[in-house]
Length: 72
Image (cartoon, rainbow, N blue to C red; front, side):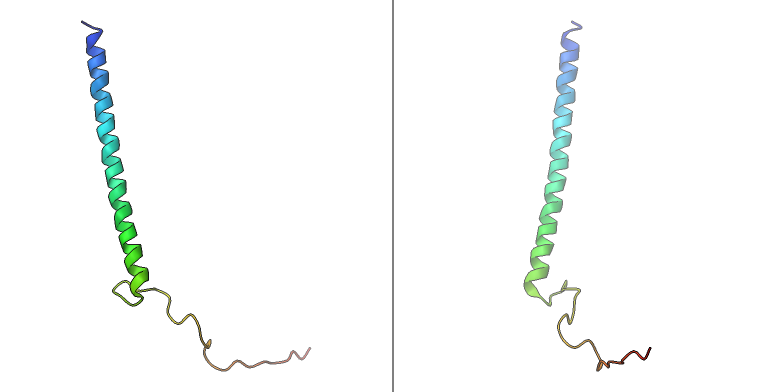
């Protein structure tokens, strides 16, 4: 009788571990889906609710640049 108890306990522990792993995988999958949804929405619209944080990347740096020759 002592031999059947550890096997039953081992089976229960294995089943719990599998359930825990399934739960972790499900959470990671949901987080990845959310991340992919945000990434697809942010780049597609350009100026949506979550637009790009980079504005005016091309163009003049502001003001006229002047060159001064070194005197020494």
